[in-house]
Amino acid sequence: MATVDFAEQIKELSTTLTSIEKVLDLDKIRAEIADLQEQVGAPDLWDDQANAQRVTGRLSVLQADVERVTGLRARLEDVEVLVELAQEEGDPDSLTEAENELKRLGASIESLEVRTLLSGEYDEREALVSIRSGAGGVDAADFAEMLQRMYVRWAERHHYPVEVYDTSYAEEAGIKSTTFAIKAPYAYGTLSVEAGTHRLVRISPFDNQGRRQTSFAAIEVVPVLEQTDEIEIPEEEIRVDVYRSSGPGGQSVNTTDSAVRLTHIPTGVVVSCQNEKSQLQNKASAMVILKAKLLALKKAEERAHIDELRGDVQASWGDQMRNYVLNPYQMVKDLRTEYETGNTQSVLDGEIDEFIEAGIRWRREHSGA
Image (tube, rainbow, N blue to C red; front, side):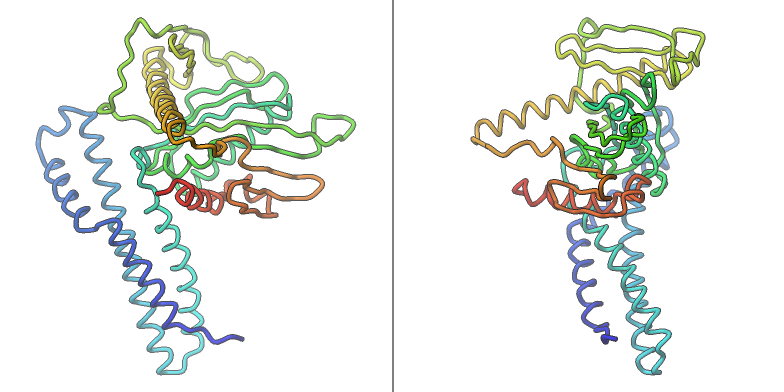
């Protein structure tokens, strides 16, 4: 059994953590926390509920950031003391405990290091995820539902709230499309690397001859906007349609026309919402989604224009970015990062952090940042 070089491991982790502390700028964060705490203490804070939620939400995020970094530093110092005592007393059990704690610390620090790579304009926002079934018929609709479950399970693993805004069910099985929000800080920056075309290869459970089927689903991820974001939509540019909410197989789940569909006439962008009980609430939620999608469209057009000016000939990394192969062998592989695993079930159960982290690092390397 190889001897563990505890001193070297601790030094490497400490160096990485110091780098993270500098990038995050803890002094600046603490100054902002003090300012936000002063605002929270104001007696008229909740006179403006939207601003109050923004202030308290931001304060919670920053406090969690500081606690996470300081907690990791304290754990690293504790394990250093543990190693010193164990080596002095010749205690192999304590050394094994220290070795295991260093492995856990390494994973936690690496995950935090990835977070520091999320420095885009909207990276710290919550995420709106849309999934749409593509080519492949009923298998594609089933695949779209499998992907929705995968992302919801991922959110649950991290204790992130999920709110489903709209789901369009397919006739036989699965879903045609769905839109849901993952309400957590940095959800957009984290999940934005999941956008693109996902491909499934398997023996179709819907084919009575047991043939292999290839199907596709598209993932779109956009940031949830705040009231301060500059996206104004004139009323005459929006067509509003109302209809009854429905469940799987077209079964009505609402006896009133409470579901709302908004069409942005100039761009043709269509969004809908049926999760709320009232038409007014659904319209407000649909407007949140529409604004987010229009902002994403605007940013995409700006990027395309800049790439054109640069003469950028790189292919879009959003297309067919991941393969899920369940037959004739088991493998999930990201086509951009080359990261892969044979444990397909764990991935479909929401264990996708390694894919996400590899994607974030890949994007940083290829963005020139």
